[in-house]
Length: 350
Image (cartoon, rainbow, N blue to C red; front, top):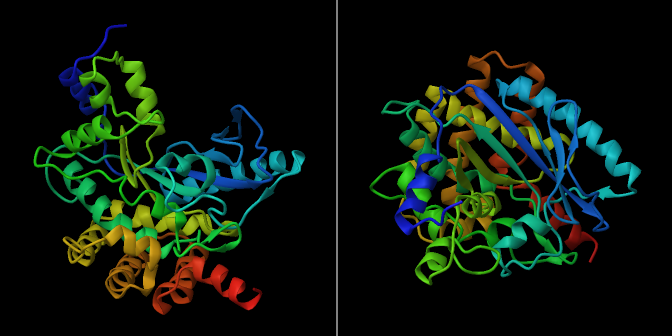
């Protein structure tokens, strides 16, 4: 296996960033934060997807690409039930929040070892312009992600005490974002991958320039370990939401899929989030303030309304529409997020 030059490495990453496809298929991955830190090792097949171990604290339930959001939700529900039985056999407890012991100013790789999120995989979109175009979907995913992060923040504690953030998980990654470039999504992703530090500290670009050896397998492992809020993994991956309590994992999956895959909702979401462009310290505000930030709160209200309308247009079940409406009423309309429930409990029982 040959050593890659800097240019060859960038071309390798860019060429594999996206496999263009018409929106419609949905994949979901749900992290489970377990206590004590003794997750079962190895990958286990489930009915539809698989259970994998990311660290002693985090196991991941990954569902397959599914034709539509309701099929994706049913499959994930089956696999989460099976995963729950495995966790129970190991005498572990799944925590209802998305993080507890990780320091918000710690290293970015702590994302994969001590925090839990919900990732939604969608088709990359089509080459060219239009509402289903790859470039437009990439741009919308980036403007939408901080709004989703604020609405679904659910990791406000460190060692059981308030950490000063509503999402420690997002605080860890507030500098781990893909910067847009004039060349397009593939070029932006390649530049991010090449400049992102690995677990050893050096980025691929630094490794090459220091005379180190870098192969395509090295790059593949590096990419697999990166956890930006929006990623190009052949498909489009949105990793903005913290793990939610109970079956609340369904809501970020539904809202994300509707706002990107329904053309009308995508237009409304783009309009609602356009005002965020140029907002200072937006990810820091999403992680610390969530929907108490008035700019993020206004965008969230418009986006959740657009997602609910899309569910009605697409004939999604009444039960699911009601679940989205209940979350919107309980949190979004009140400028709250699930982390606020946890913080209320800490204040009530110091």
